[in-house]
Length: 94
Image (cartoon, rainbow, N blue to C red; front, side, top):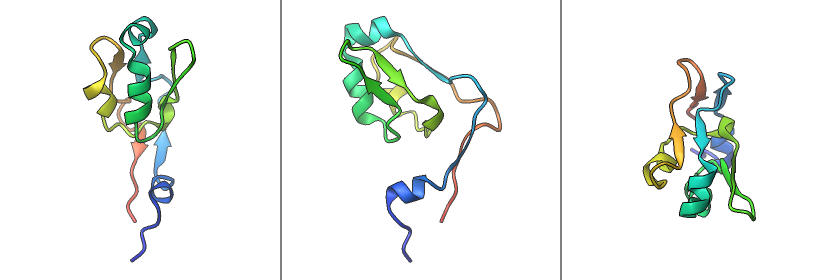
């Protein structure tokens, strides 16, 4: 049974957006702690990107809600919550 590549499998997921970001970055804390490169490296969905000035942009709509960033980010860098009920990532199998 061929399940396809990881990218192909992730492309089967569906996203229902609730219109409000469920992740916020404290830019000052991110710059002070140097957390941007860490966030960029650990996110499996490539939600985070670091600019040359150390600011962190995010494409929160693509978040897989795995919580890795929340577990590893220095304290105070992220404000993170699950999307409203019925929204967010909807995983599909097969």
